[in-house]
Length: 260
Image (cartoon, rainbow, N blue to C red; front, side, top):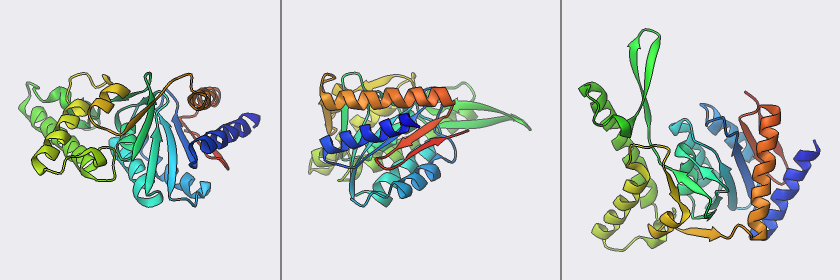
């Protein structure tokens, strides 16, 4: 497809501007991270065959399965790259946000956002029927069993985020104070901003993230590099819509459109 060649050329151009290999992981706005996506991303990274240990990933999506989002982030950071720059052209929602949070630096604009992290859990109501609950919304549920389960999952979210933020090579690392008490207080402040709130869809802006001490670089939307990044996103979204696919992955050498 000519559009695929255009995508690869865009990635090549952005790579040259950033002086880093670039990979794009773009979700259909109507699709979420699925139960096998970490394997799909891992296979794509092998096929892209990037020899360098530093790279940039352009990621956009509304979220999905938390464990898969975390596994995708760990694949990028632990298995493939020692240094990772994450680019959010529009939204890294929910579990998609794990990728920028494990990165060394995040590139955003004033119209780029993270949405809050939160875990889902299931409650069986009959043999074949389950209700889906979001942990933070059910902490005060009138049913004590559901409230107790919500507390477990909410604390699990906290634990995962704390471990990510404590890593000296992650997004907050270089800005953490030396004193342990101050360090924990700063991590707690970030956790509250990214986890607390009844509205899971509430977003956190680039400026808010930067004020928390996270390593964020904010691009002007008239910047030529950023305009190319937005063009890449728009082109990916068009292909995803036309082909009715949930996920598109792009490198300089290859394009993979994942079908349902």
